[in-house]
Amino acid sequence: MSEIYVPIRAFGDFTITTAVIKNHFTGKLDIILPNYLSELYNVLNGDDYYNIVDVIDINRSPAFFELHKVKKAGDLLRLRREVITINKHLKRQHKHLFDYRNRRLNIFFKKFTYPVSTGNIYRAKINLLNSTLTTKPADQINYTGVDEVKKAVIFPGSRKRSKIVDIDLVRKIISSGLFKSIDYAYHQSEEPLDGAIVFHDFSGLKDIVLNYDLIISADSLPLHLAYFFNKPHFGIYNDYLNTQWLTPYIEEKKYHTVYTGNVEGTFADIKNKLA
Image 1 (cartoon, rainbow, N blue to C red):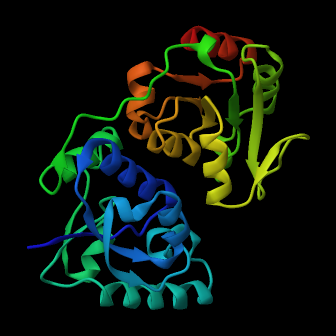
Image 2 (image 1 turned 45 degrees about the horizontal axis):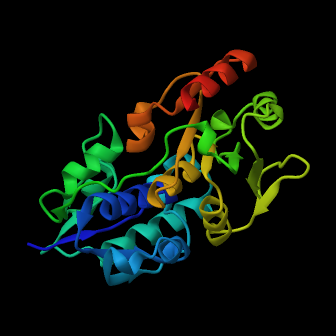
């Protein structure tokens, strides 16, 4: 029975899976690619890690996986249309690899496998793909301390407001003199500080990540892209440390801090861990 990856979730989920294949396995995974992931697929050099066996004509993340956004009659019509479209591409003779487990998948009456729903998502996906791909020694990210950083960049934003890095903490990091050079970057849809780098698409985000020695970010996509591209990275979390989404690099190096309202204390923690 052939296994086919169906990445119908958020951009971060697809980036994590691709990073796991790149950094931990050899070989390629068969994939049914939805249209809305095409740009990110190209930015991640997807042909190096996947064989595209089918394409789903969906131009944004399906409502099926974000039912909290289904509020109007038009949303229900979209939901029905997308469920029908997805189902046409799922074959009974295949086992479909999904990025997460949800009982709503039962409506398709097809075979699915997915990472375990508890623990760290990177380890879960490594375990999931162990029986499909050939393992290799994990790629290493070479970086030891703040003295080696010539250029750092911070991504304070996130599509989830609860994850956005506090503006006073951002200003403290930028003005601290901790790095020889530091910039800050925002997506065009966010509210950038004056003088910030503004990116418009995944290609722009990739260029920024590749151009710096250290990526500092909210709990958001730039961290996972940094892991994919083997760039040193440090995560800033609000209120509590969400260990489920830690990259292996952040987990190993303990390159993370939790902001609970104390700017000076949080900055001291960042400085101490990077040192």
